[in-house]
Length: 391
View (spheres, rainbow, N blue to C red):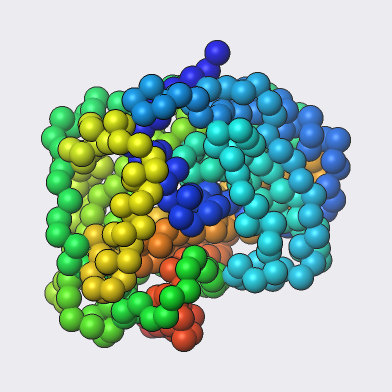
């Protein structure tokens, strides 16, 4: 039976879900055609059986906690999306459905009917990361086309994979980094997100966006700007297939002197030195801390950070890259575009996702409502896009 250890990052995601639910990966594929429900049901069952990490639930407590294959196929839903534009969270209540990591389902597929057909692959973030979710989507579409799924049964946790390449640990810096939209305002809870589409291809997209974010942050107040960049650790191990959480992070300090090229050089140097495989020292002991205690402390930290206007990081930028959309077509559905809903947390000032296909790039930003209020999220997006288009 498939089972794997619960990592620190996954424990933190469980806690985040208790504060900002649902905390999940949501990959959305837009297109045309039709939904042949029996074919989708069969493909979902076949692909998930070949990738049992999609069927897991959490068993055990503290250091004994394990993800265990429930044997149950993830949920398939059909919903009405005719009032949803796909450009933000308004009109999409089906994306707010809770995924239960303890009882299941912890993953699901949602077929969204409307003028534009959409398919949402939703996975609890404690169960898998964005790349794992994309791989699961690829597997289901393989089955829809009558192909054999590649399958995955890796039980590696992120820290186990990281330790194969890097023994150094890291310690968090002081919470001294500012948000790009200024200080929190009001008492609204939760997060919100928006999406914009840009035509064309951009050189060093991550570097350009990082510099523009730094410029926006310094225009909103005085302070340092540090960005978190998620890195897929699968690339470290050739041929590794996994639906688990195998993402770690590197960090970029963006100064007034930073350029797109200097950011790119910084990222390249960190990866060359296995900076993406550095694990925080605290992770070794956190498996002995109860979730209720972690939840209480995180709520307290969130209040403190919003009140002070200083954070552990200024935000997260996840560059998912470009994908061939033929991989996400089958069963009567033909994909023409795709995007991801940012898995934002209230303790993080923003979560930006970059995704591309064909001649388009989609930019999505999620943000705590207390930082997005007063039109600040929309203005932030427009300023970043204007800077990109001016290059």
